[in-house]
Picture 1: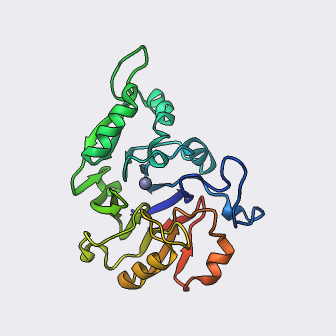
Picture 2: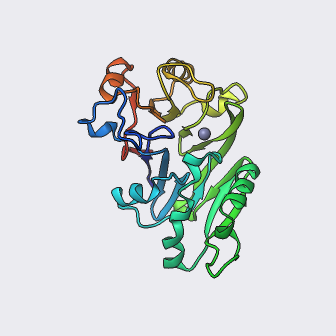
Length: 256
Ligand SMILES: [Zn+2]
Protein backbone atom coordinates (compact mmCIF):
# COMPACT_ATOMS: atom_id res chain seq x y z
CA UNK A 1 0.00 0.00 0.00
CA UNK A 2 1.27 3.46 -0.90
CA UNK A 3 2.06 6.02 1.75
CA UNK A 4 2.41 9.77 1.68
CA UNK A 5 3.83 12.51 3.83
CA UNK A 6 2.16 15.91 4.13
CA UNK A 7 4.26 18.77 5.48
CA UNK A 8 1.62 20.43 7.68
CA UNK A 9 3.94 23.20 8.82
CA UNK A 10 7.45 24.23 7.76
CA UNK A 11 8.03 27.47 9.69
CA UNK A 12 10.49 28.31 12.44
CA UNK A 13 9.33 28.55 16.07
CA UNK A 14 7.69 31.95 15.48
CA UNK A 15 6.11 31.08 12.12
CA UNK A 16 5.88 33.34 9.06
CA UNK A 17 4.47 35.92 9.41
CA UNK A 18 5.33 36.37 13.06
CA UNK A 19 2.48 37.07 15.53
CA UNK A 20 3.06 40.84 15.13
CA UNK A 21 2.65 40.64 11.34
CA UNK A 22 6.39 40.78 10.55
CA UNK A 23 7.28 38.94 7.30
CA UNK A 24 11.04 39.57 7.40
CA UNK A 25 12.49 39.05 3.90
CA UNK A 26 9.55 36.91 2.80
CA UNK A 27 7.20 38.16 0.08
CA UNK A 28 3.77 38.22 1.71
CA UNK A 29 2.06 37.86 -1.68
CA UNK A 30 3.49 34.36 -2.12
CA UNK A 31 1.25 31.84 -0.31
CA UNK A 32 4.23 29.47 0.04
CA UNK A 33 5.80 31.95 2.47
CA UNK A 34 2.87 31.61 4.90
CA UNK A 35 4.43 29.07 7.24
CA UNK A 36 2.97 27.51 10.37
CA UNK A 37 5.09 25.79 13.00
CA UNK A 38 6.72 22.43 12.08
CA UNK A 39 4.59 19.32 11.93
CA UNK A 40 3.90 16.57 9.39
CA UNK A 41 1.64 13.58 8.89
CA UNK A 42 2.32 10.19 7.31
CA UNK A 43 -0.67 8.34 5.89
CA UNK A 44 -0.92 4.75 4.67
CA UNK A 45 -4.50 3.67 3.99
CA UNK A 46 -6.45 4.58 7.13
CA UNK A 47 -3.28 4.70 9.25
CA UNK A 48 -2.29 8.31 9.93
CA UNK A 49 0.73 9.10 12.07
CA UNK A 50 1.21 12.69 13.14
CA UNK A 51 4.76 13.96 13.73
CA UNK A 52 4.68 16.55 16.55
CA UNK A 53 1.74 18.67 17.71
CA UNK A 54 2.48 22.21 16.58
CA UNK A 55 0.70 25.19 18.22
CA UNK A 56 -0.94 25.57 14.77
CA UNK A 57 -2.26 21.98 14.69
CA UNK A 58 -5.97 22.86 14.56
CA UNK A 59 -5.56 25.05 11.49
CA UNK A 60 -3.18 22.57 9.86
CA UNK A 61 -5.61 19.64 10.14
CA UNK A 62 -8.53 21.77 8.92
CA UNK A 63 -6.56 23.08 5.90
CA UNK A 64 -5.54 19.55 4.91
CA UNK A 65 -8.95 17.99 5.67
CA UNK A 66 -7.44 15.46 8.08
CA UNK A 67 -10.19 13.88 10.13
CA UNK A 68 -8.34 11.03 11.79
CA UNK A 69 -5.14 10.64 13.83
CA UNK A 70 -4.04 7.06 14.58
CA UNK A 71 -1.03 8.00 16.70
CA UNK A 72 1.47 10.78 17.36
CA UNK A 73 5.27 10.60 17.38
CA UNK A 74 7.35 13.37 18.94
CA UNK A 75 10.79 14.54 17.86
CA UNK A 76 11.46 16.47 21.09
CA UNK A 77 9.74 18.55 23.75
CA UNK A 78 10.19 22.14 22.52
CA UNK A 79 7.06 24.30 22.61
CA UNK A 80 6.80 24.63 18.80
CA UNK A 81 6.60 20.80 18.55
CA UNK A 82 4.32 20.07 21.51
CA UNK A 83 2.03 22.98 22.42
CA UNK A 84 -0.81 21.72 20.21
CA UNK A 85 -1.22 18.47 22.17
CA UNK A 86 -4.39 19.83 23.83
CA UNK A 87 -5.96 20.23 20.35
CA UNK A 88 -6.31 16.43 20.04
CA UNK A 89 -9.28 16.32 22.46
CA UNK A 90 -12.01 16.02 19.75
CA UNK A 91 -10.38 12.79 18.45
CA UNK A 92 -10.80 11.29 21.93
CA UNK A 93 -14.39 12.51 22.13
CA UNK A 94 -15.16 10.94 18.74
CA UNK A 95 -13.56 7.54 19.34
CA UNK A 96 -13.73 7.25 23.16
CA UNK A 97 -10.22 5.86 22.91
CA UNK A 98 -7.06 7.46 24.22
CA UNK A 99 -4.65 8.55 21.49
CA UNK A 100 -1.29 6.76 21.59
CA UNK A 101 1.63 9.15 21.69
CA UNK A 102 5.27 8.09 21.27
CA UNK A 103 8.53 9.76 22.19
CA UNK A 104 11.75 9.21 24.07
CA UNK A 105 11.65 9.10 27.88
CA UNK A 106 12.73 12.76 28.25
CA UNK A 107 9.99 14.07 25.94
CA UNK A 108 7.28 11.87 27.47
CA UNK A 109 8.25 12.93 31.01
CA UNK A 110 8.22 16.58 29.94
CA UNK A 111 4.73 16.22 28.40
CA UNK A 112 3.42 14.45 31.51
CA UNK A 113 4.54 17.46 33.56
CA UNK A 114 3.44 20.20 31.15
CA UNK A 115 0.09 18.62 30.16
CA UNK A 116 -0.68 16.53 33.27
CA UNK A 117 -4.47 16.71 32.78
CA UNK A 118 -4.20 15.03 29.35
CA UNK A 119 -2.54 11.94 30.87
CA UNK A 120 -4.24 11.64 34.27
CA UNK A 121 -7.70 12.37 35.61
CA UNK A 122 -7.10 15.33 37.91
CA UNK A 123 -10.43 17.13 37.43
CA UNK A 124 -13.72 16.30 35.77
CA UNK A 125 -12.02 16.06 32.36
CA UNK A 126 -10.95 12.61 31.15
CA UNK A 127 -7.35 11.92 30.13
CA UNK A 128 -7.10 11.71 26.32
CA UNK A 129 -3.61 10.39 25.53
CA UNK A 130 -1.64 7.27 26.38
CA UNK A 131 2.14 7.61 26.66
CA UNK A 132 4.53 5.15 25.01
CA UNK A 133 8.31 5.38 25.34
CA UNK A 134 10.22 4.37 22.22
CA UNK A 135 13.84 3.42 21.84
CA UNK A 136 14.92 2.58 18.32
CA UNK A 137 12.79 0.46 15.98
CA UNK A 138 9.01 0.27 16.19
CA UNK A 139 6.00 -0.04 13.91
CA UNK A 140 2.56 1.58 13.90
CA UNK A 141 -0.59 0.29 12.20
CA UNK A 142 -1.71 -3.14 11.09
CA UNK A 143 -1.18 -5.47 8.12
CA UNK A 144 -0.71 -3.63 4.81
CA UNK A 145 -1.10 -0.24 6.56
CA UNK A 146 1.81 -0.90 8.92
CA UNK A 147 4.61 1.70 8.90
CA UNK A 148 8.07 0.75 10.18
CA UNK A 149 9.98 3.49 11.99
CA UNK A 150 13.54 3.93 13.09
CA UNK A 151 14.08 6.62 15.74
CA UNK A 152 17.62 7.95 16.05
CA UNK A 153 19.00 10.54 18.45
CA UNK A 154 20.57 13.63 16.88
CA UNK A 155 22.06 16.83 18.28
CA UNK A 156 19.85 19.93 18.55
CA UNK A 157 22.04 22.60 20.18
CA UNK A 158 22.39 21.83 23.88
CA UNK A 159 19.71 19.14 23.70
CA UNK A 160 18.84 16.28 21.35
CA UNK A 161 15.95 15.48 19.05
CA UNK A 162 14.80 12.29 17.37
CA UNK A 163 15.16 11.74 13.66
CA UNK A 164 12.49 9.47 12.22
CA UNK A 165 13.17 7.20 9.27
CA UNK A 166 10.19 5.57 7.55
CA UNK A 167 9.23 4.38 4.04
CA UNK A 168 12.61 5.52 2.56
CA UNK A 169 12.25 9.02 3.98
CA UNK A 170 13.98 10.75 6.89
CA UNK A 171 12.39 13.59 8.88
CA UNK A 172 14.97 15.79 10.59
CA UNK A 173 13.18 18.99 11.55
CA UNK A 174 15.33 20.21 14.46
CA UNK A 175 19.03 19.43 14.29
CA UNK A 176 22.40 21.10 13.84
CA UNK A 177 24.77 18.13 13.97
CA UNK A 178 24.45 14.56 12.67
CA UNK A 179 27.86 13.38 13.88
CA UNK A 180 26.34 10.91 16.39
CA UNK A 181 24.15 9.30 13.71
CA UNK A 182 25.40 6.25 11.82
CA UNK A 183 25.35 7.49 8.24
CA UNK A 184 24.34 4.08 6.84
CA UNK A 185 20.89 4.75 8.39
CA UNK A 186 20.47 7.78 6.14
CA UNK A 187 21.62 6.28 2.86
CA UNK A 188 19.41 5.44 -0.16
CA UNK A 189 16.63 7.81 0.87
CA UNK A 190 13.95 8.90 -1.56
CA UNK A 191 13.28 11.96 0.59
CA UNK A 192 15.38 13.81 3.13
CA UNK A 193 13.32 16.40 5.01
CA UNK A 194 15.82 18.54 6.83
CA UNK A 195 16.12 21.56 9.12
CA UNK A 196 17.29 24.74 7.31
CA UNK A 197 16.57 27.67 9.59
CA UNK A 198 18.51 30.56 8.08
CA UNK A 199 21.32 31.76 5.86
CA UNK A 200 23.32 32.59 9.00
CA UNK A 201 24.78 30.01 11.35
CA UNK A 202 22.63 29.09 14.37
CA UNK A 203 23.58 27.21 17.57
CA UNK A 204 20.78 24.61 17.39
CA UNK A 205 19.65 24.40 13.74
CA UNK A 206 21.32 23.74 10.39
CA UNK A 207 21.67 26.80 8.19
CA UNK A 208 21.41 26.65 4.37
CA UNK A 209 25.10 25.91 3.82
CA UNK A 210 25.04 23.06 6.36
CA UNK A 211 21.83 21.45 5.14
CA UNK A 212 23.17 21.50 1.56
CA UNK A 213 26.36 19.87 2.83
CA UNK A 214 24.26 17.08 4.41
CA UNK A 215 22.36 16.74 1.11
CA UNK A 216 25.64 16.33 -0.82
CA UNK A 217 26.95 13.73 1.66
CA UNK A 218 23.79 11.63 1.85
CA UNK A 219 22.69 11.96 -1.81
CA UNK A 220 18.94 11.35 -1.34
CA UNK A 221 16.78 11.42 -4.47
CA UNK A 222 15.18 14.61 -3.18
CA UNK A 223 15.80 16.96 -0.25
CA UNK A 224 13.09 19.16 1.26
CA UNK A 225 14.14 22.06 3.49
CA UNK A 226 11.96 22.78 6.54
CA UNK A 227 11.89 24.85 9.77
CA UNK A 228 12.33 27.94 7.57
CA UNK A 229 12.70 31.32 9.28
CA UNK A 230 11.42 34.65 7.91
CA UNK A 231 14.75 35.55 6.30
CA UNK A 232 14.30 32.74 3.74
CA UNK A 233 11.93 33.82 0.98
CA UNK A 234 10.54 30.83 -1.00
CA UNK A 235 11.38 32.08 -4.51
CA UNK A 236 14.78 33.45 -3.53
CA UNK A 237 15.67 30.16 -1.88
CA UNK A 238 14.39 28.11 -4.83
CA UNK A 239 16.66 30.06 -7.22
CA UNK A 240 19.72 29.24 -5.09
CA UNK A 241 19.05 25.51 -4.69
CA UNK A 242 20.25 22.56 -6.76
CA UNK A 243 17.59 20.86 -8.91
CA UNK A 244 16.73 18.09 -6.43
CA UNK A 245 16.47 20.35 -3.36
CA UNK A 246 13.22 22.19 -2.65
CA UNK A 247 12.04 24.51 0.11
CA UNK A 248 9.00 23.08 1.90
CA UNK A 249 5.68 24.90 2.04
CA UNK A 250 2.66 24.19 4.21
CA UNK A 251 0.58 21.48 2.60
CA UNK A 252 3.40 20.04 0.43
CA UNK A 253 2.52 16.38 -0.20
CA UNK A 254 5.17 13.77 -0.97
CA UNK A 255 4.28 10.34 -2.34
CA UNK A 256 6.67 8.01 -0.52
ZN1 LIG B 1 13.54 22.46 18.94
